[in-house]
Image (tube, rainbow, N blue to C red; front, side, top):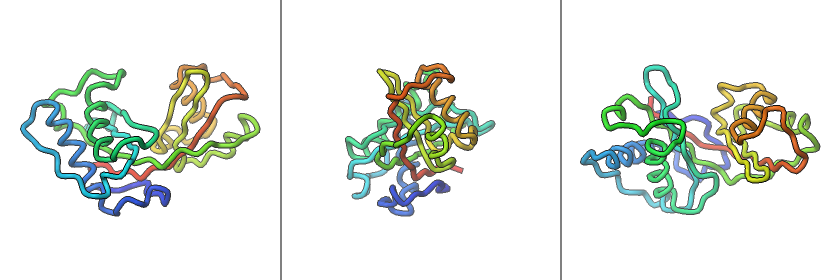
Length: 195
């Protein structure tokens, strides 16, 4: 298990949080798929409210296989990671549900989010300048459209203009769209992934 993208805003988590988060995410999926496995008992820190995303990737080629999460804390982190792990495996609309034999060929990543903060900017060019590649997760909201990219997406889209254009598309908007009343929020994550 390796830890990456540790950020002070989510540092309320113990340094070894991944040693519980990753096994509980995997065990929750396996149990949902019918394996006779019980997730490990939740430590005290996991009973505090927390928001996370669970990402599944194919080991052979590192391709995405599912990603679901919560943008805001509203339930215990233990419940959030359990529910989002099962949802990433079974309810990501981009993919068919994960099968029990397939689970052994997937890597699990858990990203715990900080609270989102509104991002002030003058215009789209100013917004691009204010983005912190590799650090910021971004939420775009506008008139019923919403999309988010975790900070890990910067690895694939390192250019702020391209990052923002692809986020617009994810939110169901054209990449050349812009409106002055768009709401942008940023957050950071502490993430752990299986080797």
